[in-house]
Length: 124
Image (cartoon, rainbow, N blue to C red):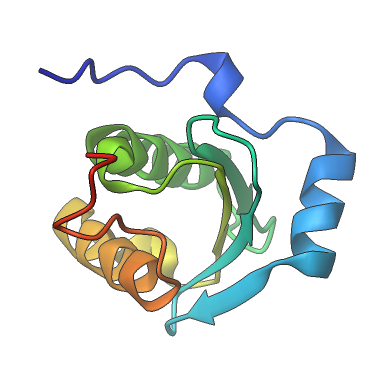
């Protein structure tokens, strides 16, 4: 049984970490979302960072979007490979998507960036 927690140690918080992911990481995107992914050799849990543009005018919209991203990551973190660092970048228009659409788009991007574990993987 998996524990569905998302402690602070599983978050990307330092600016230097964001910059290294932007510089060295892989990119995948849809119309409203982009992810930057950096694979690291460390055997650590996947880590998440979120970047929401100030072009989304209302702070409540930005915060709701960030809460939804964290919840989607929390629910699917056990499907993501070890040592992966992911930054989700919300583009203008993403605040109008509902939770299910955000979840579908993020899972599509995770598969596209190959961060989801293989089904037959012994790491599951």
